[in-house]
Image (cartoon, rainbow, N blue to C red; front, side, top):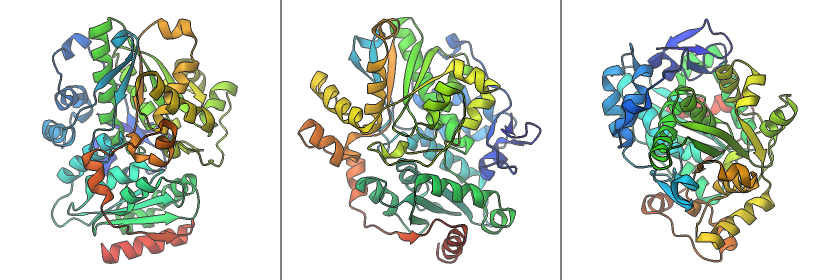
Length: 438
């Protein structure tokens, strides 16, 4: 399988090269030249997530050096579950897809661990140390740090917006070992993402520091995520006999793109509704038809505070243009007041405790017409554990939310971070320091 740039389909690479490069040389994002399709009956009985992943991803690993290692990569990285939990009416009504059972209690663990397992097999002894450069709005950085912590041949440089992630997220971003450098940037996530993209577009920097990515700009993050939607959709098909409709809390659109890929593979997926916070770039695009990136604003759902989502390029490419994309997906915006209300109301209805991002998804589903809600099974993706946001969730429900054991262990780590201005020159200096010390 070859992977083409979203900006120039003639510019293609094999999977291993696409993973190591992160971004294509022209600044585009890699995507498969063709989506594999499956007879869903051939997937019956592939219940463990790793087993299903090996079957679904085999076409994307074909003719690549990583092909022989796919089973081992999946088994090593996807060793925790993504269970469905009934909320209303069982599998034929509303269920929640819990994506927070990994080591950092967020959905990013699936892709980050999968990518780290791939890199471990691509980096040979004696090769230059690879620098994983990551911009994060909260959860990505912690998951990447956990996945790459202590791995030989790799250093990780994390950029996050200072003061715009939750206190627990910051502890996850900055409590790691000697091969992780955490940079608190005086700006927004969009500033962090801009700096990362500028670095990747500079050939001298890419060569000097052997830059690669672990954001959702890296196709290696999206491939395992499509398996999550496949597994959930197959379970709902078996239980309800109908395609599953998904509500996906969205920021940089990586999870949404993975769901769209799963549907393009002819898996039983119906509607895809994107739930954004007050950052309205995507909802306004669906409403007006004009792509107008803008500066992000801080919200309760901080991991979704993105004003210029990178993966829009992949979605437009997948559907062959913006008009077709606007016919195949939907998007809505949920403000902070509605997020607070959603946390409170879902707890009052059935004792469900959800994070602010998941709350945006529930609010989006509640806003869908009753006729449409009853027309088929719906799944809301729960993207993070609510214990990561106690300052928001606990006052809304009136009780403490204990962290899962894996998250609690991370919170005991000391904070280690450096402060950085949002300029290319400052980032270059930090990369030089990381190269000397990590």
